View 1 (cartoon, rainbow, N blue to C red):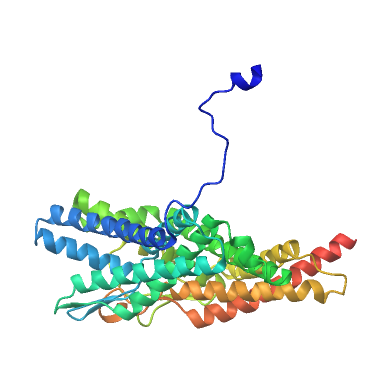
View 2 (view 1 turned 45 degrees about the vertical axis):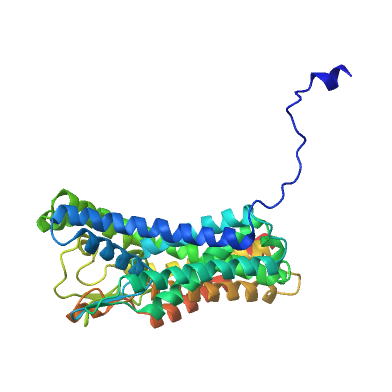
Length: 394
């Protein structure tokens, strides 16, 4: 009795909460939140440039910011003979993160009990996000400027469906339920493929970082020569950060050996570098020059290592049965193949045009990169689990 009376009367036993919001309402709010934050970021940069340049109108600066947001969704921009189709993947990644966080919030704050409920939430999020893209495109439409509406819709549907859906499923705790129907080997291959792509992207980021550190003084000289002022320098820094993922994927194609181009008739690959006149942009200072050194030639071994990572992760997630070496090699090879295909798909996102004339072709050679990366990662994925099993037996 004493113990009962000594407990605080305000303490309420924990009980499961009911749904706080209907699922369609939560999913729609999450999509609109992602749209609003992305638009505000792009418009803020545009308005800052308007204040610094003191030209044009305030409404025009808002319109430019909205167009920049559409460009981050793959819409492309066509005006007076100038075409920009390269996607600034840094800002696209920001939109993907916003959609994921919004979907996670919607899944946690609503009653999602089954795959049917999850599908309803994802469809609602995709529909609202796509409708917002159409509305922004309609509001920014003018005779002199055009954007690719269908391309932006395709990218928007893919982003909202993949990242918004993933966040909603994780927030609702349905990830294990949705993956349960897959065979164990399929789950292992999927995990291995994702690990292999992550390893190859990490190696690409390390190469890009090393190149920027090595050529840092040259990049600073290019930035100082632009003479854009403090606000212009800040905007240029934002643009540079936005295209860093593009540069990382180009570095990945360099690692694979296929290389990339920075204009029509140019090539940057371990076998040699052919460049022409380039725009004044600090990131271009990190480009190599001349024939490839021996260590650049040795970079082609990295895709083998990424495939080995994929194979080992697959073997860890799906321990092979005792039916010979094929039980280790085949799942690892599949994970390596998935690594090459996934990385090739990522490099496709870094291609496009960044201006008129010869700058219509910029980015990795997607087909060659995909084929070479897939073959190398497949070999590494097949060999690594077999070698690990042989060492374990010895």
